[in-house]
Length: 194
Image (cartoon, rainbow, N blue to C red; front, side, top):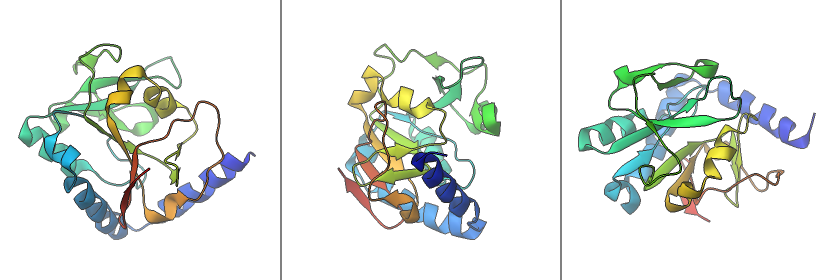
């Protein structure tokens, strides 16, 4: 088991042990920090995630974006291509269906956005993680899905927020060549830019 795997296992176990009340309370505090940012207030297109396994719950932010008429993009694992995600525009919760790893993702009727065109131009991206470090590098579940997405040329335009709980912030994570940092990390305790 690698050092990265050991850190991943420890952080996943600690997050899974959280009570639903703790997840709700800490998520609400992190979400409030995102709402205070100018980027949030001015966004026209946002790359979001649907929370799973006690990740910071941002569903209230997604609903708010729908109400504001903002384009909400959510990832969907590409069938038969491990590590690859498509991004699709989602207009409401009924557009979602259980997908890979039992994560709610855009259904087959949702329009896929070509990641190499101007149609994909998120102003902000909220990125989940098993952990983040002080340099903004992310530790995920190990499939490389977000590493590939974050490495895309169009993602350079987005202000990328990593969301996690304060116990998931590490001073320094073990890194691989393909790891890409986010621009900011938001927890229930603080939001800081790197």
